[in-house]
Length: 409
Image 1: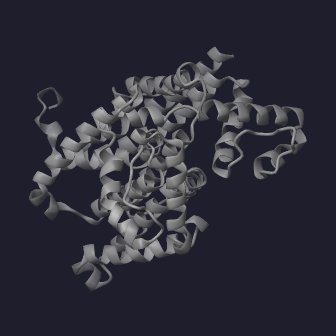
Image 2: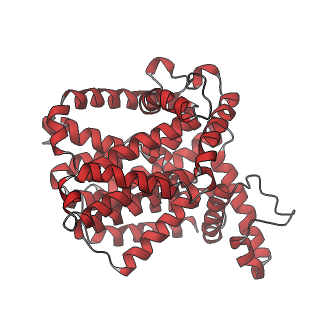
Image 3: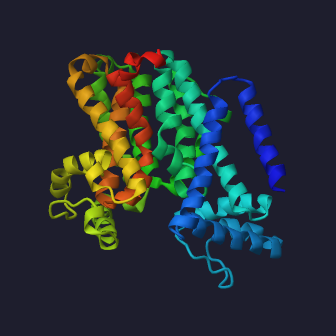
């Protein structure tokens, strides 16, 4: 059965590749699948516990319950009030969403962790490849930067693969971004693509509503400005200021679509999560802030340190295990790229468009939000893949360092 599923995955990959014939496809796919398997091996033999196995075993219980009670299949998938006999370990709404998705795959794979992991990694790879091809076709001079940012960064590969929330969430994030980029440059969208886009956004919202909320807040003004540019003279003459005006409006609208985004709740949620993570973290494995409390002034004061720490830490001397060492090496490269980009800022500023503003704002807002609420280095390295692909893309594109590497020319 495992061999049969590997053949199915290979066939799907061949059909996906056939229309493109890109030589990087197969190596990138193999690395992605290996990352998902490595995640399971790490948690099985090194940590001997972890979310990935908890999710799988809960999904296994759910899949078995569906087999035993097939007439209740819709109840299992559309409700969260399971019977006491099912007794899932992780019954949080966002975790349950992933568990249900994994349970569907488990029904197909016979509750085989490794094959289910391969399917999830394949789904994640397909959407990352879609984003890579879409952006490479739209920006052919940035093909290497796009490929490296989306397909090759180790932390994004590792935490975006296998049976874990981030794997399906990054697939959905790349999916909606691909469709938005296509819509933005083609100026129109088909009914089918809009339905697919809503499906991806629904998955993203259910798994990582804060990724989805910030994404929506920066995408809406970008598209609105594009639509209004040729219709309103003021917008046409002041597109960047207009973009920030519509951003404030979009943030106000986003603040009412989830209880944790309400203004009287948002800061409290951030601070409560922050101190909850601090209690579970060793002092040297967490980011510390100045008297963090739920007030706008306090959050603003701590935001620069949150952005810097969330993007560039842990440093090499702060790393305490192999995963943190790997993350710190990546962070070092990011820091060098960031400094080089700042040095070239005078050349870069005149070229910034509303799409660049969306990219920059998304990175800044999400990095600050995630770092303040999740100060633990280990957890943050997982959650931050919601913005790091775009950060790598922005810095590589702005710094142009890949253009000066001989074997990449």
